[in-house]
Amino acid sequence: ADLGEAVQAATLYQQALGQAEEAGERDLLVYLACGMARLDRRVGNYAGALEWLRRAALYLEGHPMVLPLTNPEGLYGII
Image 1 (cartoon, rainbow, N blue to C red):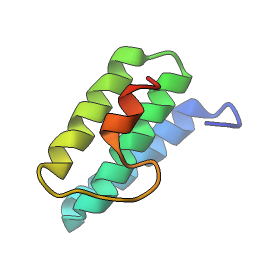
Image 2: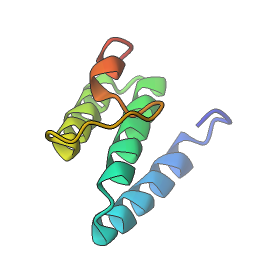
Image 3: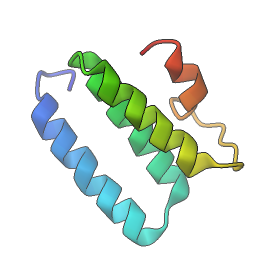
């Protein structure tokens, strides 16, 4: 997305999300959902960004993560 390839980035994120879901990788799902939120924010899709943060929070459901850029609550302030 930083190189102006938001569509390609979104496609790759979607592919990764599908694979993470199949593998049951909750931590990766949270990371990718937060990444999609940041991507949507960059292209001005604030409603989409908030939806991705909601999904990330659902993936967490009582399982806290302490990884950079994977805190949906912290990202709400910048979306």
